[in-house]
Image (cartoon, rainbow, N blue to C red; front, side):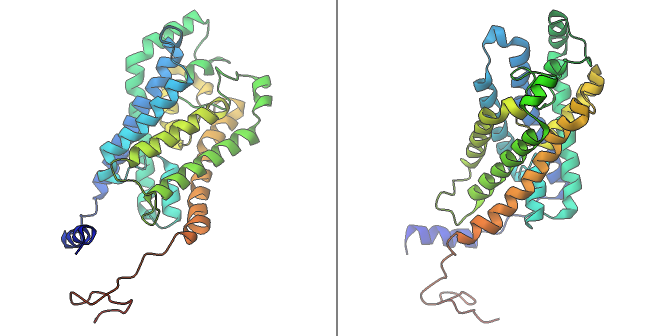
Length: 313
């Protein structure tokens, strides 16, 4: 018997891991999204407040989000599967990979975790952000203060790269920003499901999966950050947006610029994209994956399949 067959037999003999409890799933989503925001938005805080001093650029921000995603998965995958994103939760539910009964709880835990991460960042950097507002002669909640609130909230377009106001909105109209989020999030789901597909010849080892997903998120940040700040995630928007409201950003937080259209782009766009991406993978790509090979050879244990024939009931 080959080494591969021995390992396969050992895996079959091991008892199946217990399904994580509902409490474990909710805790995992809350902690995972907390880490995602603390690390990802933390790099955005540094870029906005100290960028001129530290030289923090879009490259560092993209790398920060990549590692934030990776470490969130490393820490909480065992507890909840690390969705940390309503787009992922909805995409998995639509394709039957996640029960609909758990969807509201998962999304609620994600938004709560994102809010808590944003609250900790406000405690860390709140005074420095206020000092920057004084330096730039901006008032929280006033037109143009999106250049400050963006440390918490993803806006379309990026306030410090493309700008705010009518000229910026002409460069990135609503339809363009919405399609950017739909397409980017759909691609994220396609990549996630491709990496999870055991029939893929490129299916990575479990330890490498978080790095692969994080790297793809970093690439999406490089490409789409100027247009929509790469939301990809309604919880990444809503949790910190609530914190921005508490900070005093008022209508710049809710409903946000463009009479709320920016919020639609960064909240609804990813949800639509997540569902479309999961459906595209299942209905367009997955049918072309090779079918698993049927066991061949003599029956070695009662009930084991041989030559594709079912064993005795």
